[in-house]
Length: 475
Image (cartoon, rainbow, N blue to C red; front, side, top):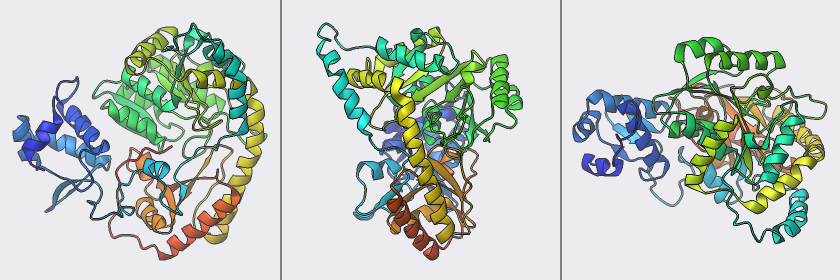
């Protein structure tokens, strides 16, 4: 791409706050993620772009280096800098390493089993709840339907949900959102400025990483379990810390109560808001006790929840539990974007929350059966793969004996099964040998998927150099 054409697309990229290289990287990231700079697009050399933007060469080099670390661009000696992924040469681009996972969800290729997505199918309780709220909807004639903080009925139900788990909560401490992803985006917008550092687990939920990157954060990865958390607070003075303490996505691990207390206390002492992603907290297997929410241990905790993993992905209802001033601030930010969420869905969520335990108990039996079946099939057909069991959640964190997850995911797609490689989930550049495999599909589909994976593994030949892929928005 010619430098002049790119500078036009960049627009007023430098008008924000923070280091110039982060602002430039943030704008380029947006252009790549929105498809305005498609895979294979050649970017100007750093000296040329620096001259066109009237900045130092170091600014462009640092921005390119950051995007390269995120695998959004590829820099090779002699061939320049390009957007990650091959340029499309025909209608079939399924082998492109930058094909985003969400495209498989929106338009699944024929006969491809999707193991890249971890979301439950719709239970009958959803339709039943809609039928129960119809009379209430009919009686809302005086309500214009805009509730930026959420309906009072749902905020009360979520507050009672936390109180039953040992966290006294007022409705004013609850902000209802369109799913947990919007909650994370609002928190990132409220607390992160360009160049701010954010502590995350490595690996972790990629949607959170994207929310923080959207605000041009510098992400610092710590091992799952947050070894070295206190030292990282002192060294990096982060604007936020983010973790998934219960049935962690993707590893399935659970932080014990004593460690939760210690992490919350350290964050409170350092004045660092700590996001507790509780989206998976209700997904323990039968008999599995989940430790209390982090909010039990500290006022600096910002809890995020959702019904998308507990009930159904199509029920786009999530929430934030936070101090009242934080909720008010988030509500103002949200009002700028959409003025509030789907009122019928919020009434349905309020209906479901008091009945949630029964639904989760029944589903836990099926999820554990799927977990056991997937592990058994992998052990039978792919005995060299490392597949540790988990106490709950939705996914297995699988280590390949050789090669890398990104190149194998491409091979698996040729065998009509889509899997999620670990690289895009790990800001440290690790987890290259891992795959995330959910166990939510019916057992016969899991059997077929493993059979196809075994065929792909038999044909797989690792590339001479590690393959990287553009980060994907995975769920």
